[in-house]
Amino acid sequence: MQTGPHLHFKGNCSEALKLYADTFGGKIEFSMTYGEAPGAEKAPPELRNQIIHARLNLGNQQFVLGMDASPEHYQVPQGFNVMAEVEKPADAERIFNILAQKGTITMPFGETFWAQRFGMVTDRFGIPWMINCAKPLEAVARKSA
Image 1: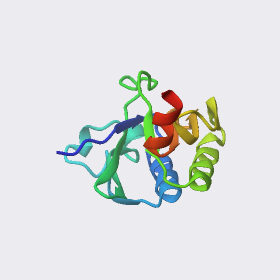
Image 2: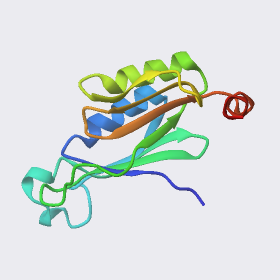
Image 3: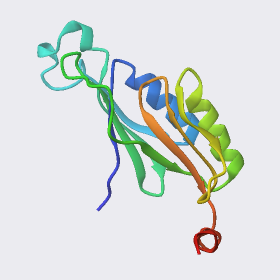
């Protein structure tokens, strides 16, 4: 089984997934607009060029799905964060800084007891992220003992 987030956007899904693909080194494997989908004639004209479904593959069986929700169904994301586990502190910082551009930092990027680097940010698309570059478990266990 695999799990992955299905993110809803307010009309900027294509832009968001392109930024995520560039930032994380992924590839958009599939993207369909409301106008390309079966039943397109029923879609309101203002939605026809927006994304009904897209998949961004991030490697190692990781993925993000996305869509543009219709205005009456869109809700500001809350109650979750998308976690990005990054191996190198420099890569984690680069990713955090890109997502923070025109976004809101909710926890500044820095060292914690569990991570070489960690930070929380809501990007300009309204998606909340946690960027984590973990310390080795042995180091965390020693500090908590």
